[in-house]
Length: 490
Image (cartoon, rainbow, N blue to C red):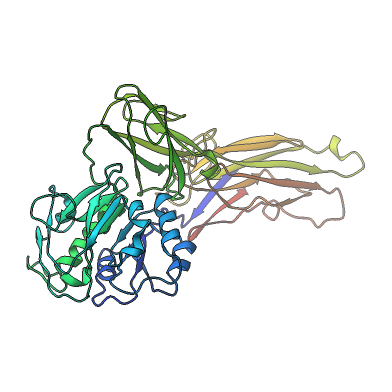
């Protein structure tokens, strides 16, 4: 007597990859530079105008917001939700021309506006990679056309922040002459000029307009992460990254807590591919201790954290002691908890002493397309007398046991690398036994728990005579484009 495990057309799919979601404000620019840059980079680009910008900003989840603002500004108080988005960990690129629009918003970008200017060229400062990655662009960006009456601002980097002047309106760095400022640890860029004034021009004959390439570089920098920040006296930076072992992309909140310096506590929102750089200032060198933790309430259920500060890995936090002016890092990885698949066994017996004459044992097998931590890999040569009919299929694990009476079998399933499909089957079905079950094929994710029941009803009379093949149990399990079936045969 043999049992037979048949797999047909088994197929697993990897977690889907998601394009970066970018919101571009462009109501009336002449040349749509930001839109072109976003499209060229292959991002998912949503364009908002003055009527719907606030609704789009507050109603979606954005990896980046770009404000191409040469003239008409969004309706209503758009500065407050944009400031909230940035202070909450969001990434943004800004242009503008009206000083009154940035009374409070400039500080959020870690810049001070020093006054307006007409169209003037700008130059690379401090060897910034905004001029070289991923596109190489001219280190002098010349004005092509003065499209607008007022064309931007002279910028000053706020000394208390983490801002870096990447470009300026003078050949060499000078106070109050910055043109592009990278702020908030590499999450924001404020441009003191209008994109339209530098279009069209391809001075390096790359086949693409220089200003479009420059904006592509800005988007790529913010999407990919922070530009390296050189430590300065009295300032420490903490680059925090986020990952899930199973490919989840959910954002979480992280907090830096210190016993010395400013600010003592600060919280940002991060997600995989969207890190944050905390900045600590005004601390006593060698006496400050800091700790990075994720807010437990913001983490999806079914995960445990792992913190790596570069020297040790713990499950509690990234800790840094005796801090000096330097750049630190903390990698937070959320590991998916195992899932469980439980099969309960029940017997329904005739009232007249059926339990005394019926063998109440049943062979139960749970099969998963991923590791069962308390099971074993399925092997056609194993002693379990199971054969696989589809050569070349791998990755199947099983848990088998004989349950007597009302008992249960639980498979502990590893989901650390992503969701796993599982199903169950019962064998050794006897004549005069009817089986019902709700044990379906299920996809188990982090920390999931599934429970089902096989019920065997015993009849001594009043049911049709069935041969062993007619009594065989078959569970057809849809897996991708195929199915798994269990059946018993002689």
